[in-house]
Image (tube, rainbow, N blue to C red; front, side, top):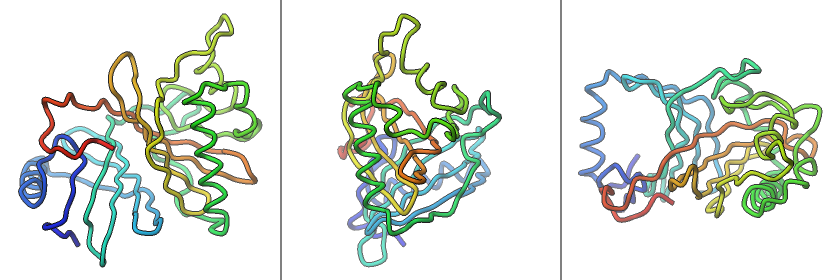
Length: 229
């Protein structure tokens, strides 16, 4: 399933190629790992999955693979400790798992890219309700609950000024049907950070959101030269 000769690893904590894979699997085998693929999608040469891991501690991860000739040749991921449930009782992984509305894949991809670039990167918070369903928005981030008001309160301070979202650049937007994964780079608390946001779109609006947020290791700690993104 993996072309070891071509395999490009973007997890900064893992060595390149077959050496890195062997080392990773050896390390994980000592933790009696349990793996649950919650949802998985296909976008051309890419497969992206929402995973739940138990490697001594429980973690939530988005995995992205690029395939050539039926073999994985490139890999990205974003891992966070499992938290929650949030104030609405939702976990980081529950909710719908099967993609629908496949004919709208490209429409939804463009829609979510515009949302993240305009609202999170450019900070046009006044446009939030153009993109998010006001009456039906399910939130899986452990720090806030359902509804567009909860999302808005996370982005706008009590004095009405917009908070710094930390998003600086969108790197990749993958989609299948009503599910869209947006991979972004930025800062959180002054720390270089990767943001992976999975959205579900229905009737032209965002109705559900899952995410993982991970600190990007300092360059001096990287075990390969490929970069996180």
